[in-house]
Amino acid sequence: MGGRQRFIDEDQKRELLQRMEAGENVSKLADEVGISRQRLYEWRDHLRLYGDLKSRRRGRPARSTAGLDGAAQLQNSADLPTPQEKALTKARRRIRELEQKVGQQQLDLDFFREALRHFEEDQRRSSAPGETGSSKSSKR
Image 1 (tube, rainbow, N blue to C red):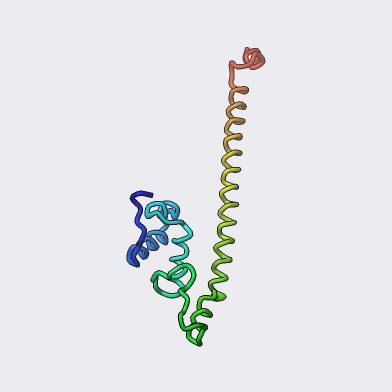
Image 2 (image 1 turned 180 degrees about the horizontal axis):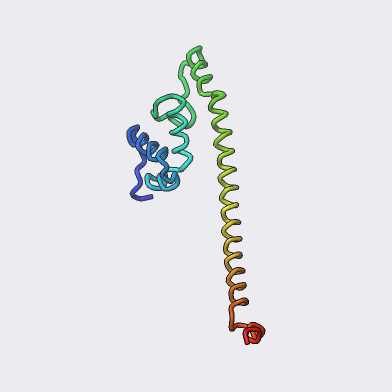
């Protein structure tokens, strides 16, 4: 991960999301900047929900020295996921499941196409004139 950047500013995020919405491959975009595909989807969802792409700090919030007063309790309640965020998480999980199924189906389809190609080649070889003795004798 030598040449990959660690901080992506809001303008760069918007550009990536525009490219994503324009139909560019999400995996390639993520690899290009050294992030996960999931991060791009999170940015897109955050932009749709809140209208901005400002980074949120991850991890445990700093402990208040004054104890849990009313403001700190309000802050802790704001850290709980909203029903919209829960729905988005559930939707992302379902999307991942469906992407895995589609990927498996593509592998199956590729396998059967290859098998069909081999079968058709064998059929052409066996029915080609001059290949078998019976086809030569029937022409005479």
